[in-house]
Length: 43
Image 1 (cartoon, helix red, strand yellow):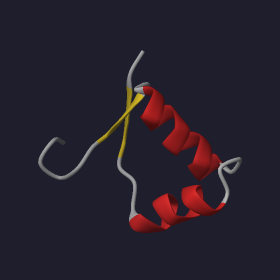
Image 2 (image 1 turned 180 degrees about the vertical axis):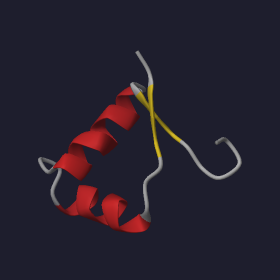
Image 3 (image 1 turned 45 degrees about the horizontal axis):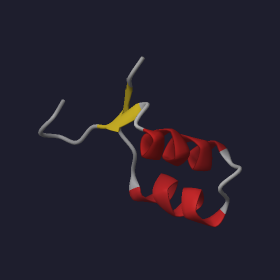
Image 4 (image 1 turned 120 degrees about the horizontal axis):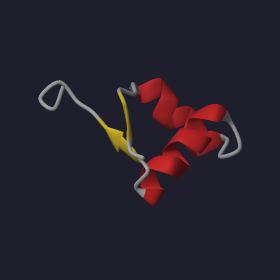
């Protein structure tokens, strides 16, 4: 199942600083291909 998420810069920075955090888990899912990042054009 694929999920979509709109993520701001703060979430990405937090993911890089703490991979075990919720933002880090979101980034990991995106890298695995289970989560698709959405931007204004794709919504």
